[in-house]
Image 1 (cartoon, helix red, strand yellow):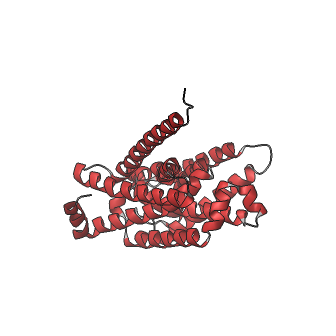
Image 2 (tube, helix red, strand yellow):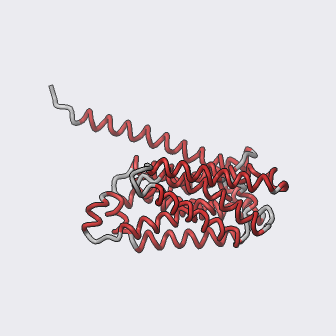
Image 3 (cartoon, helix red, strand yellow):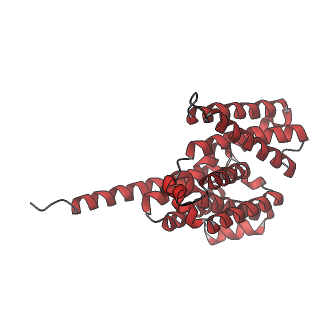
Length: 290
């Protein structure tokens, strides 16, 4: 983002809120993304993202709030999304249903419920694209405060449990044998993911929020080896994608959500090419001399 574009964002309140909300979302997603990728929770995060639409729609439907979700509707959505996560854990707890089947069944039902409830409210029918792809320019001060609190909570958890998270991420059995509370870490991460997808839906939308929980961590794992390096790369990708996406959105007059995600995907492609080139160079260097 150029300096002139940054000044334009700071001149108007709604543009400044959009920039703040985007950066706070990037901070949270950048911190959580490595653990989502390394613990293979991408599909679960996608399921919770779709389920959050059902929760937001339910909160807005029951509380008769306006086009923008209120604090109470966010609370309803969080409880609903946690119930969906509990249902997934229940259905996949036995041997009858695999975990990916349980995730697919539950999130589709929750997503369908959200579409149904939003369709029943005639005045919301024209704003469905905002739920799907985000409405970053319509972020209100309440949502900025909520995103700030969430970013602070995620940062506190990562810093306070850094050693435990590293052990659990790379070797769960060894971490459990070492006394690491893996169950607590798993539930804490799931709750943070649920809160992140609910609030980030306002920024990039239900259909794109999973990308911000996966792509930064994917770039970090491609280019980094140590957990600290992976996390720093993930944060850098998330913040760069948001700033670049907002700049492209402002200059080309396109929706910011897709611009942010496509920027992150472009960085992922670049990281993949760099990693492939590095692996080939290392493999050639290890070849025995004739």
